[in-house]
Each structure stands twice: as structure tokens, then as C-alpha cells.
Length: 274
Image (cartoon, rainbow, N blue to C red; front, side, top):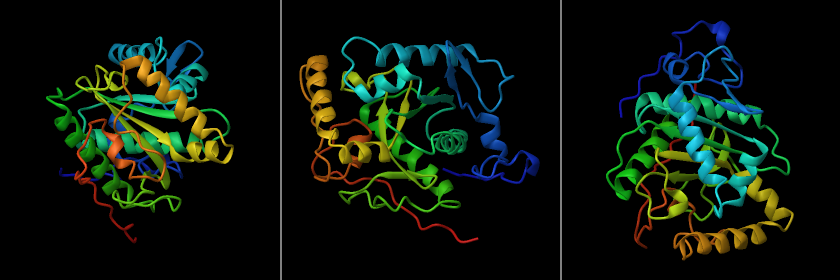
């Protein structure tokens, strides 16, 4: 992927201190940071911009799925019920436009949710394409997207010190904007029903909310509830689910049942110096 930054092409007056891509022309053109306000969809950064029909449709589809009967992930259901989530619809997965726009919008999301209290929060990045040919195809695009996002992010932020940047390490978690995220891939050809969606989608869950659950002694209970609901939803438990600390969570990200000798294609970089 050939990523060309255009960070100085927009007036400095538009820069927001927490978002290093606030003045980036590519990010500004394709940003789609969207929230639910009551019964309406809004662009918080550009409230006068109308919501396009495809964005409404894509949001409606994912909302119906997550709030549908029996959907396993109780955290996602809680976030949708409480409207404590943000989302966007972007150009094709693993393109420059999608990389810069999602980075930009995750910086905004992280600013909006600086403190994670008892509620679940999440960010859903949906993509207009490409057509997914197989689980392996999606997995390849998935990691290309994360790698390219990291290559942009490392210019401005260090890896979250609470987690490890080595995808082979048991304490690995993806980091963007200096905060760790557990990333979940969904797409049309996913073998797990809970991960099957019309649009290729990456769900970014702040890692710290799971740590809070562990501290409060609620994480194991939630995990068992999700597993029981997953069995009821599909008839079997997700074979890639691991207990915390038993293996790298990178193996769970794309949703494909990867073999034991699978090697993650992600490679962390050191933060660039000014």
C-alpha cells in the first residue's frame, strides 16, 4: 500500500489538538464519524452534512443483527441499547482512503470516550467493499488495514504500555492513538453466524473496559454468558475463543479458525521521532 500523507494541505485553523489527522485532506474527505442521537443519525463533527442513504442502510443492518434475538455478544448489545457507540461507512477496506479516515475517526472516538465507566462502548468501521472472496481474503485485507493504520499512527503515538505490541505475545492487543483495542472482524463469508454481515466491518473495543470487568470480578461471568449464547446461536462454541492470557488475541481478530502454526502478518514499528 502506498500511503501518501497530506497533513499540511488544510488550514491549521481546523486542527484539533487531540487529533493529528484533523487537517489531513484524505482523512477530512472520507471521515464518516457518526453517532446516534435519540432516533436520528448525526455527524458530530459536521452536523450540517446530510446522512446518506447507504450509511443509514448499513447502520440499520448491523443494528438489527446485534439487537436481534439471541445475538451472542452481550457487550455489543449493551452498547447499542445505550447508544454508547460510534460508527462509520468507509471506502474499500485496506485502501489509503479507508486507512486515514478510520484513524482520524478513532482519534475522535477516543477523545469522546476518554473515560470508560460501567457501560460498554465500541466503534464500528464498515466498508463499502471490496467483494469478499473467502475468509482468507478477508483476513488478508483485515491485517493490511491494521498494519497501514499502525504505520500512520506510529508517527504520532506510542503503543499502549498496558499491552504488548508483539502479535505472538499472550498480552498482545492492537493499539491506536495510544490506547489498546480488541478488534473483531465481520464480513459476508464468515463461518461464525455472529460475524456474518453484509458489509466488511472492523469492530474496535477498548481493551480497558475488559480490564475493568476483570478487576470487578465480572469478566468470567460475561465470558460464560457469551459462550452459552454462542452455542444457542450456532450450535457450537467459537473454536478460536481463548481464555485471557492463554494465547495471543490476534488469533481471534479476523474470525477465521486459524491453524496452530498460524503466524500473524502484523509487524509493529517504533514511534517515529520528530
